[in-house]
Length: 293
Image 1 (cartoon, rainbow, N blue to C red):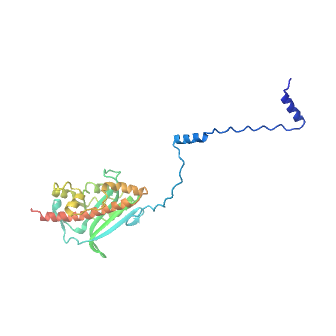
Image 2: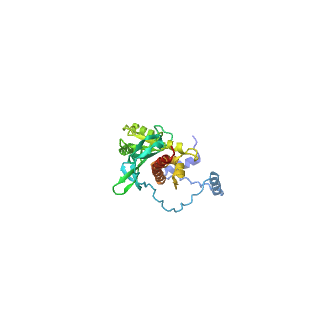
Image 3: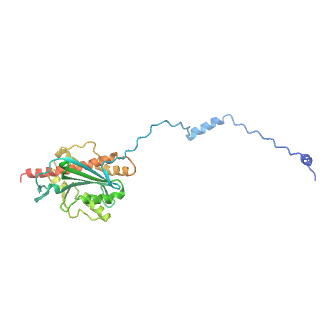
């Protein structure tokens, strides 16, 4: 068998104890002179840009989460106000509501309004705020209109709100609202039922001011919305008022960790609503008394 000369020499060196020659390293291929230029072209093609160092920004102000009132139960706030005024001196006739034989003690009246998660109604709609106003003799502050509002800041606080509102009602309480007979009262009754609580509204008298207002003022102004009646009849002009249609979004924004600014405006809107109801009822009583019969 023939052996090549190279292999023969290697065998001879191994026999003599010599180490095999180390392989000669091959030189790395030289980069083409335009490689860097091609890389820049590729970056431009792909829209890749070198990130500039982030500019310094001042620290953000803490998020505004402050709400008025005090927390009376987990997730339930009570907002209270007292507006000094003279209490009606005598019982108020309900003749304006087509009840000429009926009168009501002013301190039995409770004007109420709700702010809800929607206007469609149904079991998916809930009240997240209930506002109420009544004529009240306060031992420290004297006579005036007492305004109380209940606001829930968690869904789990709804039952506590319903119980607190029920505590404001007495068997002889007369409710008064603006379209509350068709909307607010049925919605609250549904929520009491779903919470498995006794319905405190079912036996109470209810004077809805929408219908007598329509009978008296329909056609005089463009509509009989409460804001229109405020402006035209009571000369009340709201400033920076948040429309009721935006109330659900304001509440949900707060629940999701957002600012409380819009929700405070919802509370102010609700506050004015119940104050307006008290003034409107007085206006309707006076207008009926001055009407020729």
